[in-house]
Image (cartoon, rainbow, N blue to C red; front, side, top):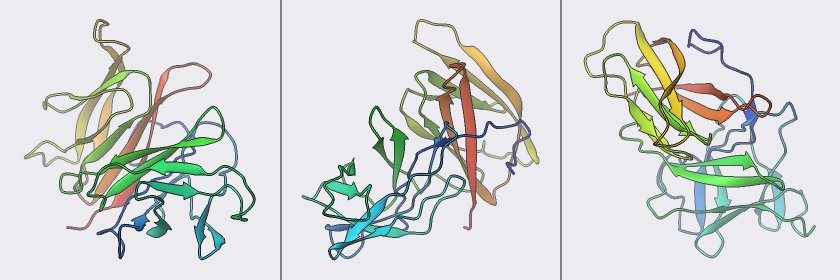
Length: 230
């Protein structure tokens, strides 16, 4: 159950978070990652596979939490292929991730439904800034998002953008006011989407995803939390 007071919609974007838990594993031909599934459709989580030593093993993938660290091979120094079949020789096209520039020690990759199957969106998490009480805003919507905590300046996140929303310095209360607004273009006025209060707990850090509801096209959001240890 979410710690937030407002009710979050249930959704599951086929997302996968490649979130490295440390330095690159052994060499540049392999990465360490964590995964999570995210898709607004009411469908089962697809199974993806990682090829290794001529075989394929299922990748750990969950809709509500990040996986444990996993490893996968890097192709041509830039690509990671996630198989859609447990047979590496089946000829089925993989879901291919294009790696961003190094360092990749804290890499987040979101697998989002595409026109055909799924696509991979990489994000390098600023781990030094993503501390307890902070929120990683992941904007998968077609609008610009502004999130304001308390009296702090609103954090603007562009379309397909990712930014860390820190807990305001010196905040000590258990709750904090939050206002979420959106606009389609810079010429449009801001529209308030949510005005509520969040728990301010430095023992956790949160991932919040913004997206458009497939039916109503209204802005929706959901969160995943994980314990944070200093």
